[in-house]
Image 1 (cartoon, helix red, strand yellow):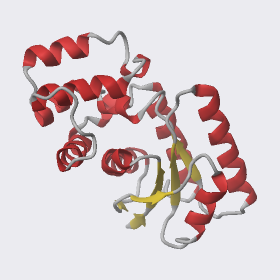
Image 2 (cartoon, one colour):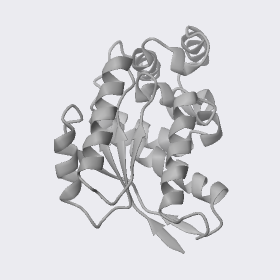
Image 3 (spheres, helix red, strand yellow):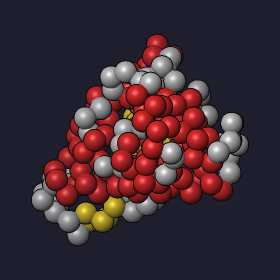
Length: 216
């Protein structure tokens, strides 16, 4: 059995609540499906660094070197030109640092909230909003959740409907509990149908192959 430890450079606190446990589950499934050996995936820990300045992420990661195998870098995908520029600068800075660990970008097309909307069944179980409201709000989007112009607003409306309030505070114990429970219930197979998540899955698989996880 091999242990796998990943660290996530995240943008906001809600990304820590949601993405960290979600990525741990996804990596567990990835390892089970893609590799022969048994892999113990440890909880994904978070680093708080300025993603606009790649050097700060490199410095923060250097401070915990030896405690992780893969560095995950979260960056929301909108606006796309800016996001792509930040990711590219981060990859180049990471390569120049001669860091031994691979860096894998985690880039939802717009915001991580798009991934939170990927499984309506999980949302219904966790939030339990009025079914009529759930249907109306989810139907307001067209196509894939990655095509939504403002997934953060869609999710906020669902939460408001569940709480019976107009504009709930986004940094409460309720929100932390909601994101944590949602991350544990979203069906990974649904996420894999989203192009951005599928891209991360492929990049993560390649990174782990280079670390020798293919055959245990």
